[in-house]
Amino acid sequence: MKIAINTRLLIKDRLDGIGWFTYHTTRLMCQNHPEVEFLFIFDRPFDPSFINSPNITPVYSGPPARHPFLYYLWFEHSLPRILKKHDPDILINPDGFMSLSTNIPQIPVIHDLNFEHFPKDLPFFYRHYYKFFFPRFARSAKRIATVSEYSKNDICNLYHVDDNKVDVVYNGVNEIYAPITDEVQTLTRSKVTGGSPYFLFVGSLHPRKNISNMLKAFDRFRKSVSDAYKMVIVGNKKWWTADLEETFNKMENKSDVIFLGRLPVEELKLVSASAFCSLYVSTFEGFGVPIVESMRCGVPVITSNVTSMPEIAGNAALLTDPFDPEGIAQQMLMLTKDQDLRDSLIKKGIIRAEEFSWHRTSSLLWDCVLNSGTKFKNK
Image 1: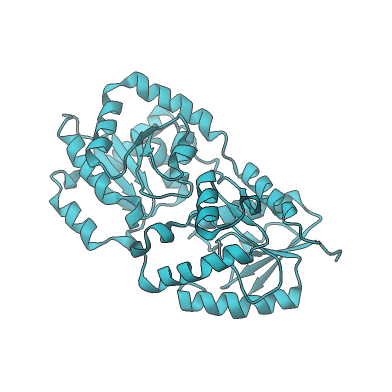
Image 2: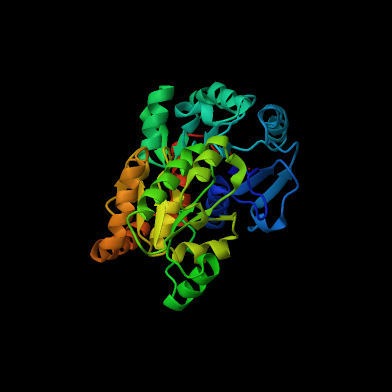
């Protein structure tokens, strides 16, 4: 059996959400199935650390696919040439993309369809590429994997896909996220906020992450408390918009908002585990990994009551309307006043987080491969 995997998002020191999904699932799948030959296909020179099992054959063919025009060139020209040469039984695409120019059976992992619901949040060429190609990907796929029941239903309803064709492969969470000692918490808070407790957001500053309403909620919250709580934001400012700039400039407490940018995971785990509360009030998520990361750290979570977030949080988080800054502020205030509630959420969160592991994710993705009905050749 030979399985090809599109590993274009395995980029050393630059793994994002889907990059981490690719890294962990492929690493475990290769280790757990030494009888299978795996072909890792990169769109740029790769780091040797990603070739971490003897049954992996790496292949590189450019150009780096980071723009719709280059997506098309790589997926419809470079990738089919590689597949024709190596003749795998099936191709897994952890980024949700596919090649429509090959007869090799394919499984895309379509994490969410945010571009269908909020198309204006994306630049012109990106949204048109996604809206044109993803329905075709869904129809052409041998089988589809996705990361929540919400996303499964969304894919089936919008793209008229039979729900028997879609498998839910929940995300895992890096085991490095865990509670830390009071001493390490104190040192971390001293470094990040001068010792003040803080609400934490982790993620890109993309419009659907709802940073604007989160900042408005923080301003409202601060009117009701005397203690100097801070707001710490970890993430790339790539999507910083004029509207977000305006919201930030109008804040009464903008001096208490701390932007840390992107952090290495070793630092992020400490910042996450030292937070008073994780604030993750996106308007749309296919899963919401930071919810579970915070739960693993023993940090209470406030998240949104829309899309996949209630499904992932279960009964272990406070849910709020992401479009209501006053409602978000009230949830923040509740956590500062009710220690029993906070303790309860911490305990429930730790238990809930145990349900999401990369071992489970890798196993579910393997089941998806087996469920595809692909006729594997002996090679």
